Image 1 (cartoon, rainbow, N blue to C red):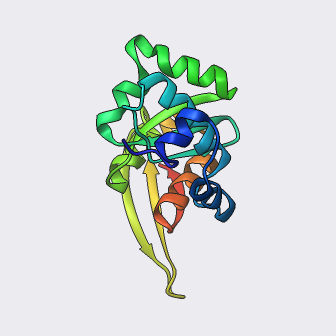
Image 2 (cartoon, rainbow, N blue to C red):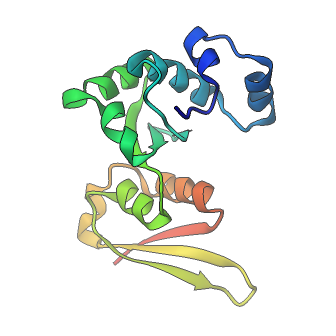
Image 3 (cartoon, one colour):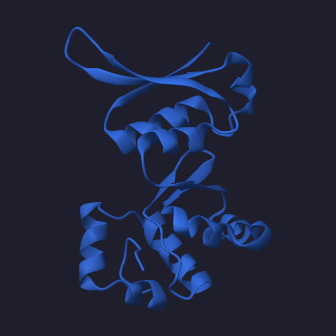
Length: 162
């Protein structure tokens, strides 16, 4: 199993020295710790996730594709309980290739293209083009999506509607 904290800490709810140091250094967030405890409880140690990211209105859980169904649960039961415990709407996104994550974060809106833009000053940013008529279909606000993708790719991100 792969959680941001060790299995013993997830099971007991008390952080060991190593996990405490990860938290102090910022490698793990308090949200990662809380979610690890919740998912360990639900999956009896069989559910894994990579990272949890909090936005203004949502919590995004990045997880390997094999764990997506386990996190969502039968008829969405598990994700509803997680959402209730954390106090925000929860979305699960498969961690993997950046383009797949972009499509997951923007769905059901259609992504027309993802372009890498090279600026004269040497900086690089990703431009995500979304159909204008699909703007209302976005489940997250565009600024949150830009922030999330920037934190995952270390590139600046711009969303444009065409």
